[in-house]
Image (cartoon, rainbow, N blue to C red; front, side, top):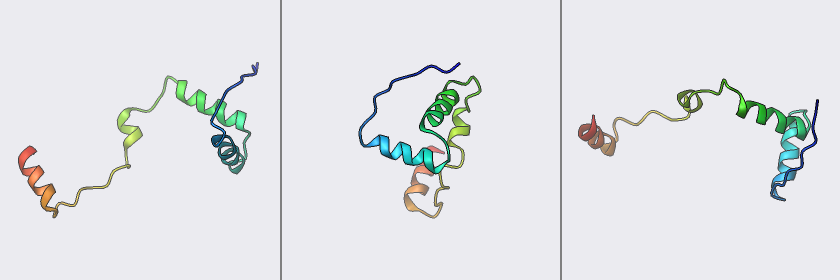
Length: 73
């Protein structure tokens, strides 16, 4: 059963959110519902899974990197 929900969002965000939903072929309500469902699921990804692939490897030839590695590693 669906329940009506009233939310308040920034006036600049609403058109962007509608474009985002339209670009994915879903309604804004569906987009919000799916996001809430994902956020509240018991199977949320671990911290490492959320950040995996988001960082670049350090340049080991960098002078600052070598100094910090020597000090802390």
